[in-house]
Image 1 (tube, helix red, strand yellow):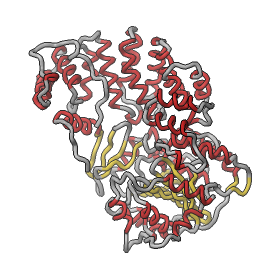
Image 2 (cartoon, rainbow, N blue to C red):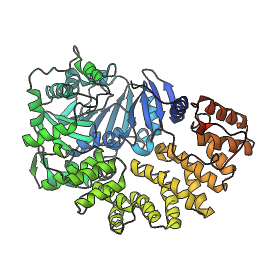
Image 3 (cartoon, rainbow, N blue to C red):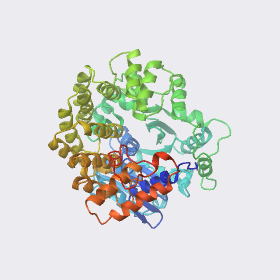
Image 4 (cartoon, one colour):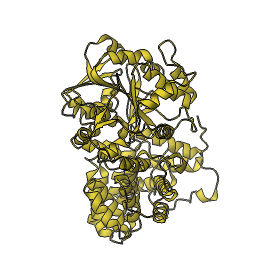
Length: 599
């Protein structure tokens, strides 16, 4: 574990941040479970985050929907592991699916799925979903029901006992529960792992399932699709299927694709790749008697230079097994290739031009990299070095935001195209465009609208939502209309859906509260500060604002706020810049915090 090298105050701020983020925790029957609101709702099992509603949506939702798209008529499904409920909940919305069984070991996880309802289609309220509490593997062996789809998404294999859900015997038990033509889908951790461990996964999985397809759901996450024999697909049927709900919305919101070609860009390789890996010498299989994966994964925790999914893509390209087998209908394969390049943006993987067999211009790679780092001006400069129109939705989102950041004329055309598919994103980006064109009043009105939507709509891209809230911090000094200030303030008072961007939301709320109170401590500032007690952000500007506000408003917490300010200076290393003035308040001291607290 990395050593913390910050000051005592920075450590205190870190601890308060972590405590403030924990919404709920419980010592369950099998595990300790908690809900955290870092960036969005996450669930923590035995101290480790096992899934995020927003960050992991591309995997949690598509893990079940990919096999549902590939199967011609999936009537009954089984999900092993409830988690946030996203996999089971979205599967249950597929019209052909009549029942979704869920095997979950820890009853406390039900609370997690309940809280994540805005992003899982209210899984637990869906009559199609049947949750059984118990050991998933035991129930696989003891049950008799047959399934068209079985989806397995346990925790990381290095966690105690989890490797038994990646063994040959486990896969054999699952295979016996599949109907003819059934599909078994397995999530695989592809981060903090070395090549030999991935080879063991393929060797074990392929020893039970004769046909193995590889998909990538998002950065660091692979999906292995196992069947009893070779499969071919009808492109026309696949195209028709993904145009229907829930597939259309899921693909749009999680992978930012709208076509069959976009969907197939996440296909990594057919069975030829898995077969080749299995033939490599010296590979061990993970079995009940020898759970080599548990120790292999454990040895690679925090590994940063190991296996990368792009290596599988390169191998599949060279072996010419990177196209899904199509028996009928047409696929625009060059378009699939285009989508595979911009996949960098949705997967949030830093691009290396040498790792793409089909080639990627240096300027495009540099634009992608700058955008993923949050450097929008650099992304735009690099794009202009090799200018062209955006090829797909991922590039359109990037260019709309980059050009809006400079208020350039082409932004309007980008936003017009974007609005047809993602109107909330278009409006959020338009706020930035209006600010950079000096239209602050219009920007303030639209910002309030965008923020109000976030209370019920969880789908705005997380990075864009964060940049919008940071932009609001810069806007506050330029908004003079009290009605507009109050509209934004009221939109910020209530947590957003799935507690998205809560630290930034709170920071903005304090800023707008101070502005509404005309720079003096008042009721708006007080209402913004109080919900953060007792684990308040431990930053100099914040503790001073808090002290001044509580003293002026005669809050019962006034004395504690003053003690906290004294404690802050006592813990700070001796520097002239932080010596506390004797009982004086200056405009600098009452300035609100300018950045969200973060660990």
